Length: 238
Image (cartoon, rainbow, N blue to C red):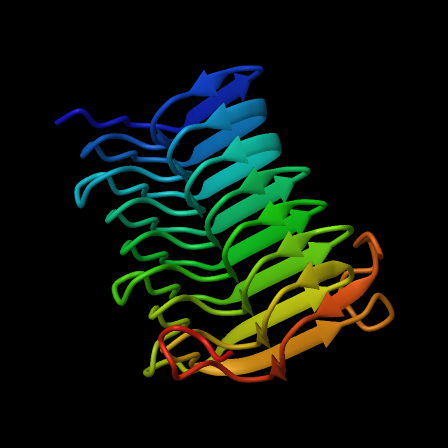
């Protein structure tokens, strides 16, 4: 197997990747953590901090730090159909994705928690602190911080898309959403889209009430409705 028995560090600057970009391996496990820093660059398809394929497990943590990056499709803090055993950190600053951003993986579990920071960026579809797909469970908690002039075309979710946060047995996870500045086209949810949060929601909108005073204040415009819970309609409420 094409495994890496340690950590992976990638620095990608002033460059162009025409297809997908992975911090982990292609069906090869990482017996450590991945740390991906990408700046002043573009990705022609999707960007993953983790690996690709069921055997491309990252046994440590994943970290994605994107600054002035253009992504054509999706952004994931986890892997593509591969799991992350530890925690996930995503920083998406002065960057653009034409589709959605997920703190978790694409049909890939996160064994720990997700920490997502989106600042002065553009999200072409929706923004999720959790994962995408029924197997993209985040077993810990989710934290989503949004500030500055960030724009989200559709919805903001403190959880995932058809992906649970926490487990029924533990029932002690948190979904924390702090919005200090953003223009959001549709709704804001403290919970998930068509899934479950096993724990509590803390939804804070406005610079004076967010739990992180270092967030950059900005105008806040929400085109739809604010819900403390989640969404039961797969397409989201209009």
